[in-house]
Amino acid sequence: MEDAFGKDYPNLGLNSDTFSWGPPYYTKLSMAMVGDSPPDVAVMHISKLGAYAPVDLLEPLDPEELARYDIGPEKFLPDVIDSAKYEGTIFALPMDTHPFVQYYNTDICEKAGLLDSNGDLKPLQGADAVVEALEKAKEETGSLGLSFYPANDPAGPWRLFTSLYGQMGGKVLSLDASEVVIDDEMARRALEFMARLTLKSEVTSAATDYAGSVAEFQGGQAGFHWNGGWEVTTFEAAKMPFSITQFPDVFGGRQAQADRHAFVIPRGLSAGRKDLALKFASSMLKNSLTWAEGGHIPAYQPVATSAEYKKLDPQSNYVGAAEDAVLDPIAWFTGAGSQFQSEASAPFSQVMNGGLTPEQGVSQFRTAVEKLVNTPSPV
Image 1 (cartoon, rainbow, N blue to C red):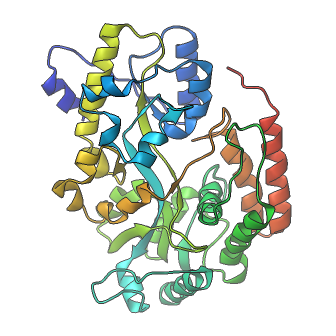
Image 2 (image 1 turned 180 degrees about the horizontal axis):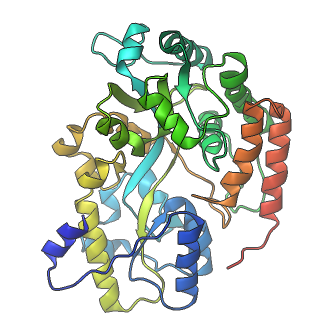
């Protein structure tokens, strides 16, 4: 994608730096912005917007100006461009939606009677139907119905909880992030289902780490795998029989945890440098079919609705997840790789391994979030 930009603008030059994602990256980015030595353009998770836009670190993006680069608001789904706004102003250009999805081994699911006449997974609706499908897959594998990664991971349990809680319409914070608004009953139901997977039906393990869960699905030890769409290339390279669909309807919807990569421009860039940054972002969005091959749903609608994207199988199978995305609440302490996600995943993991009851898990989560709400932003 960067090479394509270089071919379109051969005389501009491009210096691109890559850092370890998560806290190392965002610490470097924040320090560069505060220290008045930022890049001309940076990649940011939309879920981190609340740590940057409120403290005047990002350049606001005028819709009319964006339209001149063919990347105006009308080029994105309304929900997607709305997620790039803070207090009504656009501060980011979304490149994708990367949702929590459901992988399934087509051979195992066929033997378990879970596929329709077209070879696609039959719709699963409701907690009992989902668990029953996982149990049938377990009967075929003799090991697990589902591979998942609750152990020692700062995001896995949070992604699952957010998907389930979001299907019930649950919220964690008020819009201004000043108040904890967790619905204890909804949260308890979500955690009860998570514990059901490991402790009652035993269709998955609470002790598997991330790499182990990917290996379990790849090796045929599990019929289903819940993860982000980014592992599609891993399973394609393994030449295993699989497909992908949206996260299942457990509590009355197809909502699932998601995030979005986006381009942002640091505050105070000169007009000339901003022009280059917008040309770069425009080029990347227009060439995002390459990015979509890695499992990410294109945010730029001319790509998302193109015949080329629709031919991508199984990547285009879950395009609807872009409109069913449940993002982190906007606050300085939330988002990808954040302490917020770690604080959530810790008690949720304990619920899944039997160390805490669902009620205790909700209580510990609430206490942790209240502490974060009452902690001043470091920037």
